[in-house]
Image (tube, rainbow, N blue to C red; front, side, top):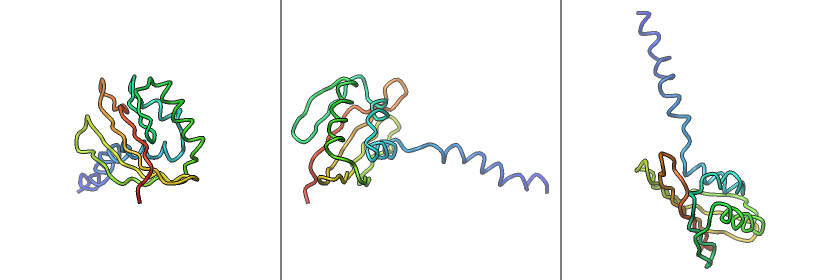
Length: 131
């Protein structure tokens, strides 16, 4: 009977590490909500395709960080809502967010792809939200 009393504890210990793993899409959403380009840049691939409004280009990590920093300085984030997630493939993730700022609402879509075992941001699009 004593062996059965340990079963709930073992189940909790087994499930705890799985519950602690943060969803990469939610992680990106939180960093965008904070306007934290420094931490967001750590997720960038060596080059990243960025579209901000109608300006589209491929940037290095450093360039992309500067471009996003400028956007967040001009558009202070207030809130972020995750609208859509594709997280069924462990090597590919796609997310769509609604970012509310002081100047308006933006639709942000982004793609994470696995590179050498690590999910990295390879594409980020920021567009005005069409209501």
